[in-house]
Length: 312
Ligand code: DGY
Image 1 (cartoon, rainbow, N blue to C red):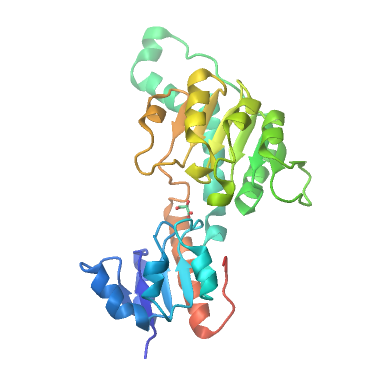
Image 2: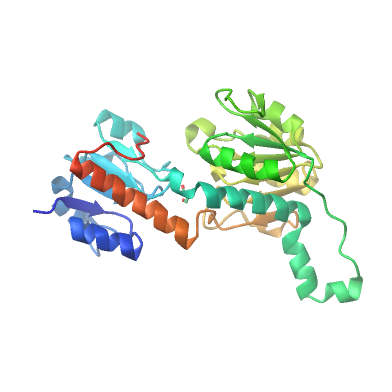
């Protein structure tokens, strides 16, 4: 008999077919009556699949008394009550290993686009302004500058590797000094003061809320650029908007926002920020790999093998 699985997020077609093959899938994701589906299937499932934006709270967990594994298809999982999982001995797997390259690429893309005014330049050509008004204003170069990475985990390290090739000097801040040839700072403010460009690559959640404060942005300074590919909560967004409006910093590139999918409209009016819709990992290849990793973690769990990427 196939084990029961609660599917609370719709995976890609190939991975969904694998789940259908291996498990009796209870489709909470598509259920018309979600409450009834949970009440009926919840007690039977030892595992569930969801993404990192799913509200997995105590009330939901109460309806899954036999739950042992939450296989998350994303890297982040801030909306999941991790303390409640720990209390109940429930494990969680995530997929940050699968998205490293695309997210690091996006950090570099946003950095360069912000500093070279790619989006404005594109509009300048399309609108005909180039023909009417002549040469586009000069922009700011990146090679030879100092890059500060807040959070040198797997994604931060991949950004560093790429940016070394761009001729940037690398510094980082984090909880611990690592065995890497980059300058270490034990706080983001000192890192920002050293840096020309600051990239937030840390995880989200309460522990990193407003890590990039008004003070940090002031330390980055008026020629500095800020890039965020982590979570909107990591930066004090009001302070960031003020810094971009007042010229406290020069530019920003943002993949993540406090309010998604409807970010603060003040951001969309600023000419010195490049915006992307929380889609750094949004490629076919990476989403396939992320969903496959979640499926593989489920297979390992049901086979009694070690989990591939246990985060909790
Ligand atoms: C992740 O996987 O956490 C990405 O940010 C997409 O949500």
